[in-house]
Image (cartoon, rainbow, N blue to C red):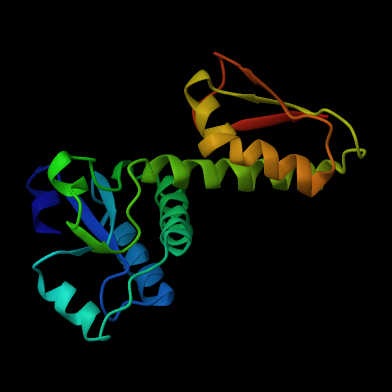
Length: 192
């Protein structure tokens, strides 16, 4: 890419759920972006905003936005690929703003004011569940997870959702979480 060769800082913005896109096409786009080696990436969910062509298509049945869950899953997969490729994802989701959150502005689509936390929480749930599956904890046990202090809320998930799911799925009495200041952000350890 010519800009990279000329020492420009290059960022790429991706939108998940664009008209005509599929999970497979989006995954291919992510790989194409990785091949470009930008300095950073931003990921936004496609929303239907009042007064746009997309609103017309939505009302005509020509466009169906992703559900919030679908958008979180696709964004999570993209973020994990970018992390593996060591390309920072500096923004996920739209910045909450009064103009955006005014009644009627968002007609449809996967908007959430804490979209990134939903994605990061989903990543942490997946990692914690994988560690528990590998360790086969006894029913009614209380495993301990260590995470970076900055990752505590992401580990818990929105409204403690991850803790509740881990307890239900694995039959745990409780899930203990401690902040480890020495731990690298985004990593997790289990002591069962």
